[in-house]
Image 1 (cartoon, one colour):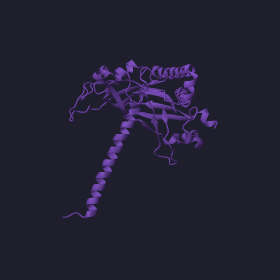
Image 2 (cartoon, helix red, strand yellow):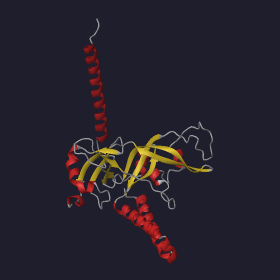
Image 3 (cartoon, one colour):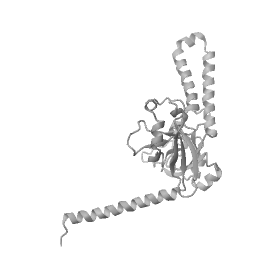
Image 4 (spheres, helix red, strand yellow):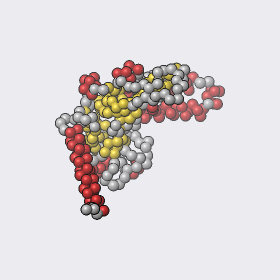
Length: 297
């Protein structure tokens, strides 16, 4: 007997519904498992590390905060790698430790158009809050400002007049950089990577300062074609956008005033967040509270 179209539709709809329910059960089970027991790590972060979207929406769904993290460069690198997420510690030894495929990036010039590309890999990344890399970055900004002031003081008057606008801009940029480091820039830095989270946690035992998160890394080459430097790059964390639960939406809306939303150059932070990481190394927001900076507006 031939089945009617409506019968076939109901059958497929039923199977689709069951599949959706099964998927939701698996996801919910993963969330429960991740959050069971004591958090693997709990950090108190501010708006510097968990930034809102450019414009907050009024509906009560879909809002997430983006985890802002950085990498530190060695003195003298002049921000060459920071914005490309190529940390100074991600050297050849670390690449080998992680078992990364370097593809054809052997450090020598390669003209093979069909050269194999390096293969990205999921590993565990350690992020440290307000640690030595952040303090070193602040010190670099302080030295850069001091150097710019010294240059201006020692520039002959006739040259200073011809280059006055440029020098003022450079001094202003150095002042702004140091101010950003003290007030606005994220204090969360990627400091290490590994294959075994247990080993990383033994190496970084402070669960109130150090996150262990899953991320994707790959090999990158730098320098001229005649002299390439092989370094590792952190492409992204698997979870960088963190959902704000409905229970904290009112607190978030109180912290983010209309005036502050349209002005990114604010002084101080408007909210603090308890961010927990569970046994599966996945984060969730445990609390979100406006600061005095926000409530005094």
